[in-house]
Image (cartoon, rainbow, N blue to C red; front, top):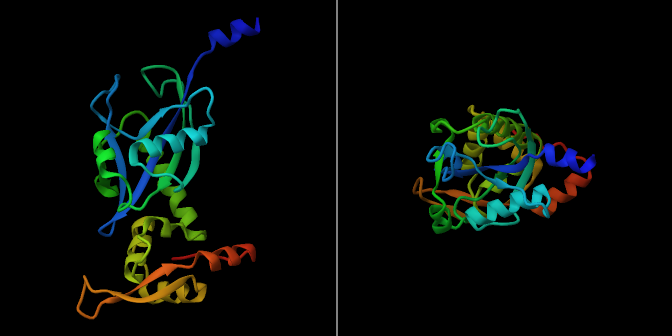
Length: 230
């Protein structure tokens, strides 16, 4: 009876990755042209079926590495999407993950090989299935997490200016932030290391480049410090 129960209730488990990047002052999403039917040729998140022998989190890391060449980046499980009619191909539950990558570090040739493209968040194409809902949910999760943890630094290059950091948080929150309050909060956190180098691409005077102080962050984390930014 148990054997028949398993055979009569088969379904697939997939993992879909919402991959965020940040470039030229814009929050971006990596999507690709679906290469399998149904819905072949339409825009889709990047995902695959979970193998029998692997954990869901390992499957998500595998998908990310196969598409971008990256590993050991910030990735967090979002939620499960399991409406019975969500996939016209077969009964399938998807466990979504969202990832933050530095857009200057991924393997561009590998991404191109898989037909993946970056889109600004405000210019996203229509996505298949319930993938648009996944993106909406992931963005809300990112906003919440960025408010209380400095994960925004995962999207920036190793060295960045304070204006670049503020632009990133404005892109995440989808609203302008007060310059003075933003700088005041950053100063109070003392999480930035001034490299004494300058980025002069925006002006002759330039802006100082900073690095994120991971050691101080870990120390403050142990103390239960409030990292609210913005």
